Amino acid sequence: KAGVTQTPRYLIKTRGQQVTLSCSPISGHRSVSWYQQTPGQGLQFLFEYFSETQRNKGNFPGRFSGRQFSNSRSEMNVSTLELGDSALYLCASSFGGVGTDTQYFGPGTRLTVL
Amino acid sequence: GQQLNQSPQSMFIQEGEDVSMNCTSSSIFNTWLWYKQDPGEGPVLLIALYKAGELTSNGRLTAQFGITRKDSFLNISASIPSDVGIYFCAGYNNAGNMLTFGGGTRLMVKP
Image (cartoon, chains in turn orange, red):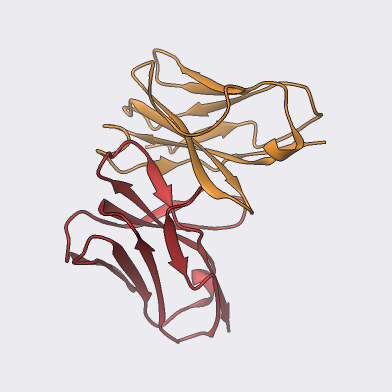
């Protein structure tokens, strides 16, 4: 069974731009969660999508948004990029979702904002 | 920010030594998970714990869910060079609506 895949793996943007990251979950998994990982703040939960609906949300500004498609693939969008948005963005998938099921992580997208 | 305190932050040990790391929380967690992250990769699940007092092994790894439900530890026996990486504890609290991570323990093994 293929694991969680994320594209692109690396991305360089400049301040003020927007970016879209993509995540394909493990086949059969209905939940996709997104996390931001930085040296200073560690791993922080952004949001979870389950069956195309946002189910849980962390403490991030509205510039961070996402969506999930009917095939469970998910995209995350960050608008008006700031230098502090430079991070490794990880997505994780599970069958039952956050709080009910083990989450499996993808390799991440390394975003650098200049 | 993080709600799980993980220690130590880093360890530099000799190959063959045993390793112990732990995670504590000020609030109760219902599930404890231990992940390992290699450079440039996402975290990989090592052990999942679902019940207070539970002791679970995965090869040379052993983890326990503390009786108070506010702590967990991970032991690695007879370390080898490929154990190098960052180990994270993570957990679901009573609300169970987000996975909270500890700050990580960076393990370095000298051959």
